[in-house]
Length: 129
Image (cartoon, rainbow, N blue to C red; front, side, top):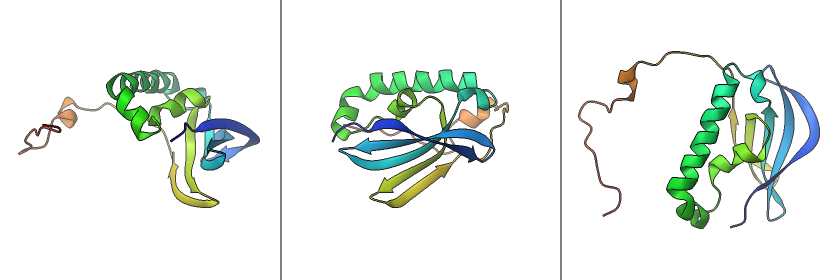
């Protein structure tokens, strides 16, 4: 499976209160993804979010690099390919929208450490034996 290549369409508009530019992602010449992307600076905490996504992309590549190459696309590569954060992301099948993900708002909040604990009764399992 070949890599998805992204390019700007020249279209721009407001999506959920964020100024955005449109990108399309093509794979083997077919549009497989449509994105409306806002600059990181338009998001509250955007510079921190950008650093986090960059770190996640590096982790993904280290942890799953060879498996991801066999499986197809590394989902974190998107953040290297577009200049900002996708406010609207549409997965396409031909000219039909298969799914749509939308950023509605951004807020900063403190998260208690307990939120990262496994639920009561959880038992660790081995993935591959």
